[in-house]
Length: 144
Image (cartoon, rainbow, N blue to C red):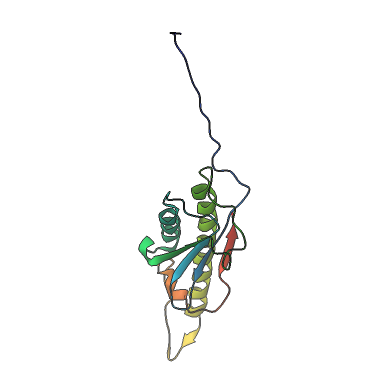
């Protein structure tokens, strides 16, 4: 048979329903990103570190990525159908935004209290978030 033909292929991607992720600033100042998504060699670790770093004013190399650890992430849907960047990425972005907000609040609170004989200025919002790492509290969790 000789003639003209056409073919179409469609694959679902970025499917939900959700993904869990968290951004923790540990007492040591280390920033840790956790997510339920897992790596299949698609580079999701780099993507999640980059997204968190952009939101927190850090270098991606300064962020530790932990994927699929059931002690740290309540649940995860996994990696399939090109969903890791879309869903885990958005969950990490939301969590990093919340951590940055908490850090700004802590810096503002610390800047408004007398320290010794003088008041120390409040760090600018662009200051490294890791400086707020010594503040006790629960890590930010976000579901995206």
